[in-house]
Amino acid sequence: MIWLNIAAKLVPGIIKTGMSIAANRRKTKELESVAELKLAERMANGEVEFKKAVIDSHRGDWKDEFCLILISIPLLLLAWSVFSDDPNIQEKIDIFFNKFSNLPMFYQALVVGAFSTILGIKGISTFKKK
Image (cartoon, rainbow, N blue to C red; front, top):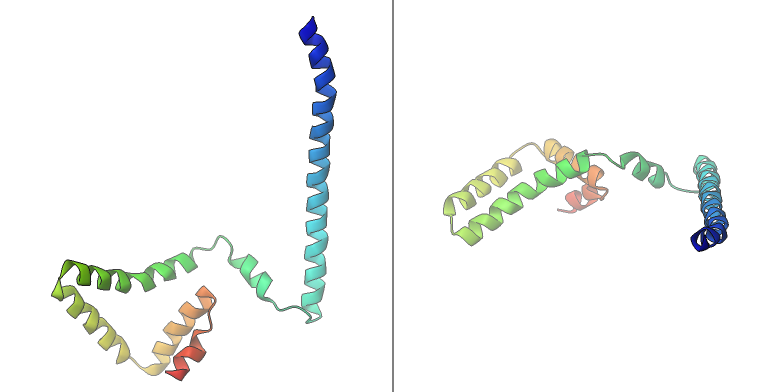
């Protein structure tokens, strides 16, 4: 009987807290929606750059990770060749970069530009200064 009295006193408080949490979540979603609408209006007016929309569109996209893995492979092989004292790997990496540097400049710029765009860095200007 005593437990029933305690439960009767606790349940209304729990329900009130749950309703408050649900109301806060609804209010948060509503405010986020209003903020997105205002941001879209400011982007349309040219007041804000298009970067946030691009970042949101790339969320959950695997091409960034894929390019990062591709870029990291030569570095990992280079580190392995240094620490394992395997000169064959170092020679092969040197051959790869020599062959890459002999490719036409437009192709090198295309590769650097593609990776730079995916990773969100301004690589073309860095590439031109070289």
